[in-house]
Image 1: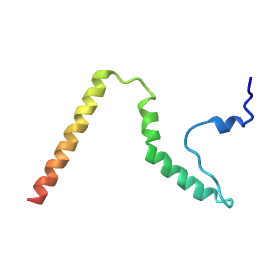
Image 2: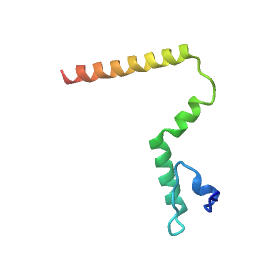
Image 3: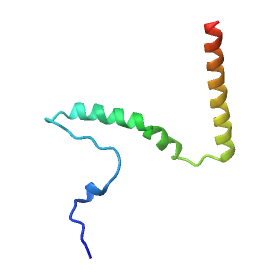
Length: 79
């Protein structure tokens, strides 16, 4: 039976940032960019409460309408 000699935090997956030259502010800035790029905060907000399928469909349709109106506005702007 093989034992794993790695530290417990080495098995964790996810976003990680290395602090170089004691530049914590720079590392924090990089971490914030990575979190924003991965949409982690939006995912956490979505999973905070259960959303009924009917509400999900309604929100999806509303987002499609907003995209369509934006596209129509861009088309009208170019004419």
